[in-house]
Image (cartoon, rainbow, N blue to C red; front, side, top):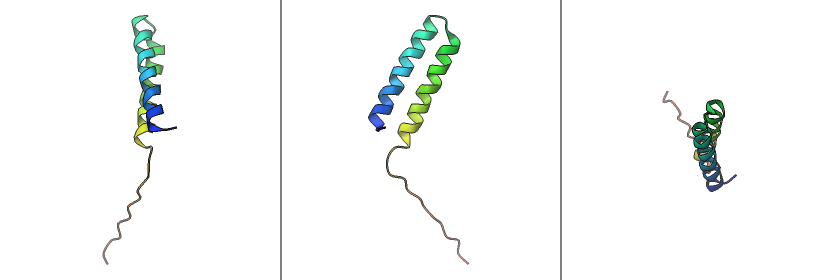
Length: 58
């Protein structure tokens, strides 16, 4: 998925969590919050990955 798609999904999960919390469904709200955090984490890791190797001096 693209970064924008993941951030949109995270926003949707946050809105669902807020609605669930206002309805008193705490467990469902917590699940939606975790799904939103997962999307945000995955959005942060989208893109080129850089591997940096540090060689110790002898």
